[in-house]
Image (cartoon, rainbow, N blue to C red; front, side, top):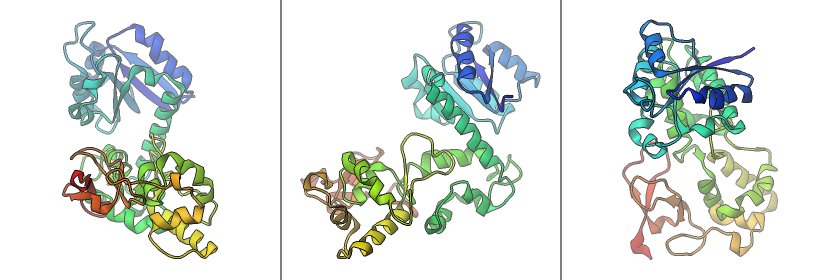
Length: 338
């Protein structure tokens, strides 16, 4: 028995056998219904569309058949009729154009068509659908229930509650058409803001830098960091399966304090204390990408608007105004510090 219906809209008939059917075979929970864009438009106009849990739309669409619009056009039509159904876009050719901001604002996820039929791709879709269900299951249950979908540890609950968008301050509202009732808006915040902006969660570069380690040696010390009362302090809430592990910043600090107390090391900055606790060799200690000295305290971007991915000292970087609230300051590399 299939748990989820995926509606695949595509103008290339050969993709039904070569891709859509393969996707269905890769994941038992999925039932994939393939439709060309002309028939999909007619189905939507007559309210005869499938009861879909997810819609996959070819970005190009207009190369075969009589349909003249692109995937964006079809996405708009689908959204009018299925306001709470996630829409993913794929392409085999125009992937760079597909990943532009205009596309990302219309689709919950974008990918190459080949990604959909790999085992990893099929598993991702099933996990995504399960997490959409988890969010939907707390509709009308209040703020605490919505926060629980993120599975914050006790040490991070207050910090997480402080950064959830105000529109969800009473939880996921019962009415999906009002502000604060759109589960897709909450998903987009989780995936593109909460997970990606350093604050309650840190990605691998941030986590390694904060404990004074070069990123390429961080994995070598994870077992020792996990061997405390905190256990594995990775994020495992909704959409944690999206690429890149993340760690709870409050738990990491607690881990270092616990290890520090066990080994009677002097108390100091976390980036300087941790390498001593873990007995990290000199070449495994993080270096500032500006001055090359060790023990950078933070991570900065090379240019405005880019992701922060360069370990730097605070004095070798500048705070930029584009990050606010409880999140870590968004910093830019100070080239003048060289």
